[in-house]
Image (cartoon, rainbow, N blue to C red; front, side):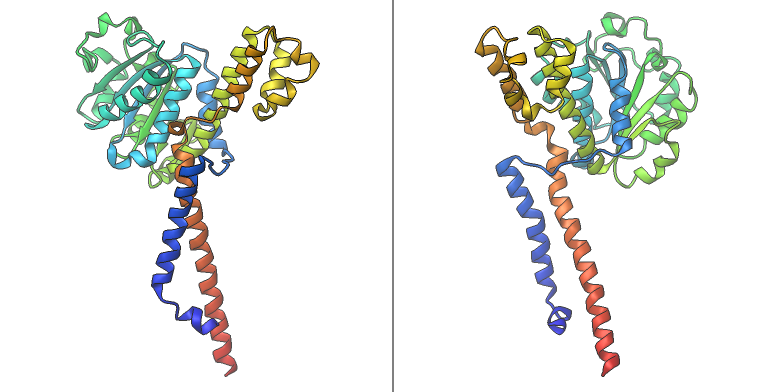
Amino acid sequence: MWNWLNNLDRRWIFLMMFLAVSIPILIIGVTGLTFPETPTPLAQATFDALDELPSGSKILLSFDYDPASEGELGPMATSFVHQCAQKGHKMYFMTLWPLGPRMIEKNIEKVITSDYPDLQYGVDYVNLGYRAGNEGVIKVIVTDLQQMYLTDVRGVGLKEIPMMDGIRNIQAMDLIVNVSAGYAGTKEWVQYAVSAFPDKLRMVAGCTGVQAPLLYPYIPDQLIGLLGAIKGAAEYESIVNTWVRRDRLETMLGGLGFDQGQIAELVQDPSTMSSMLDEPRFADQFKNTKDRDAVIALAEAPVDPKYLEGQRRMGPQLVAHLLMVGLIILGNIIFFVGRGQGGAA
């Protein structure tokens, strides 16, 4: 048996890797189920940085990536916009990359236009677009925004945009959110913005896997939180999706007259909402079954697939990595067994 394994045709290994990637993709695509994610402290810190700010805070979102890295960074950008929109923050979009404007528009269409149509352009969010110059842009806007940006991406003068009133530079922002595929990106934002004005600017970021080790030294002083690769995206995505459901349930239950203690108990685990609402202390709060059914529907509604892209992509990666580790262990076992048999002979 050991000889057979030692001489195994590599095409069988290629087949196993193909199945390890394709089967999870098919299962996740059909069932919508994803692997559970346990957030790391960095992912939680990233979420908390946005969550702890009061509604209406000014958030600068710089999407410094292009379609080549969209598979890794797209889910992060979507979740950042999702959390900001749900929280009610003011979103200021910009990019240092020539193809970045399309990434911005894609996320505005996916999240804001689709799920938050009440948000008004120029009042709740604005797209400043792309300006050439890499870190030179940062050096300018950190002290004088209008020296670099006279209009938004639509050609409207900044003085005509309500949410730009009183914004002289990006020091007016409550938080910088950067999604970066390389130069210019997170490192340049840290060096020329956060490090230059440490008392004024705070920042979180999401980056590709190859960048993450280079950015860890900036944690936690210059970077409050950091999402690394698709794993970080999946963790953050999971936190945001859970919080959004609970936040919407809290709003709905509050409108139905539930007190804060009851709401906290009910939203702690939305999966048990249906059984808990059958208890007299909760059931008596409803004036009709329609309201009760609406609460249960919200608690049990599946998450929109567009907010699960990071977690869906983690499935094939997880299984493929487990297979690789298993093959490495098996290869070492075969080596030592073969050496032992050779020594015995």
